[in-house]
Amino acid sequence: MRYNEKELRALSQQPAEMAAELSMRGPKKGSVAKRRLVKLVVNFLFYFRTDEAEPLGALLLERCRVSQEEPGGFSISEWLPPSPPSRPGCFLPGHKNLFDGPRAAQGFIEDPERKYYFECCTQEQCQEWMEALRRASYEYMRCSLIFYRNEIQKMTGKDPLEQFGISEEARFQLSSLPRDRRAACVGTQLDELD
Amino acid sequence: MKLNKRSVAHYALSDSPADHMGFLRTWGGPGAPPTPSGTGRRCWFVLKGNLLFSFESREGQAPLSLVVLEGCTVELAEAPVPEEFAFAIHFDAPGVRPHLLAADGQEAQEAWVKALSRASFSYMRLVVRELESQLQDARRSLALHRCTSQKASASCRKPQAPDSRSPGLENGHFLPRDCSPVGTVEGVGYRPVGWDLPEWELQGPTGLLLGRGQSPVSPETSCFSTLHDWYGQEILKLRQGWQQRAQGKQPGCKRQDKP
Image 1 (spheres, each protein chain N blue to C red):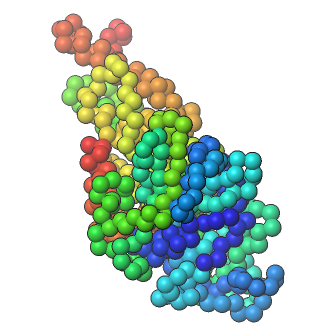
Image 2: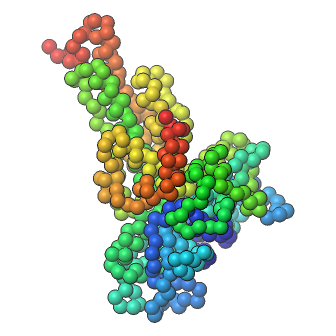
Image 3: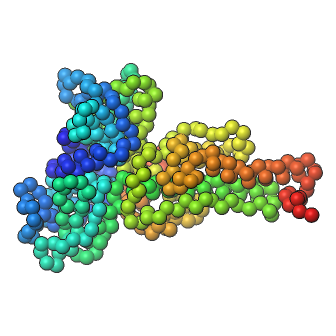
């Protein structure tokens, strides 16, 4: 898969939502923890040598799992489908939830070889990072948007996106989510919020 | 620079929604001449969120290329072949050539330009924040409405929510200041003490906005305490009137200062 490094590098120089020097360990066997500047920019996590402007690498944060690791650390596991990948528009059975949590574990196969470990200075910093990383996916944003749109429509009877002329936009429709995830998306947030 | 390619490729093929797809002609690729010529190569393109993937065919099982649609603009362009419905993705980065693509027809071209120019994460985040703030307004006015209708007071008016409509949501451009973390969906649970509205009105999504303070859409009302005071004046007045009536001193509710 081709991609332009210069484009990604330019993205890595954008203002970060979170940035800190953390101890980071890659997924390769026998790899040791190293001090890295870690930067969260949109749905990518960039990591740099602490004295270099050029990023060493980037992790796409869609469909990743962020977990607490003892002590004062967290990990990011890459998502792998439980069965051979299907085409866009289909969905994998058992993959019910966009959000990290017990239910999201269904259909998620963790590959110990694709796990990145991070160590924070404090437990507080660790929580902050985990929160930010869990929200840093386009799918999470889409789900939030659909939730808010439905809530506002229920309360006011009006579509809040109409005034901007974007109510027809495919990416803002509930139907843009796979059927099994629609209820999960709105349902989860309702559970949490009401 | 490394990228977790395997994971990216899995995401490209996963069940997550595709925001747009179709065949496009492309002139990029390894060994492509600096100036595109010829008819290009026809590939299947899938837009997922802020990621544009290309495949050999509709059934392709491995993405050929990835473009991350952040910090770029999409414009109509001239194709090397006449009568092509071309457009280009431009990046504002040194040494980065635009991606030249062409659709089969004008309709497809327009649909692609529209979808691509609204694809950035930052744009999505801006819309989410806008709706967050609208929901907060709606909840507040509902709370107030219930409060006033219970007291059946004609002089109680609904508050006008501060104007927080942000321009430019329709064109996909976002403001560079939009870089602070979004309000938490879980809520941080910050609630002022001594707020006398029924508790249920203040729980749930109203708590969403209170976490991070900064609103990208209405900076002048971004501070919760300002909003709180602003809405609070109304509540205090109502409460005062209600208490007075409850004590049987002022059956008229408000306007007591007028002769």
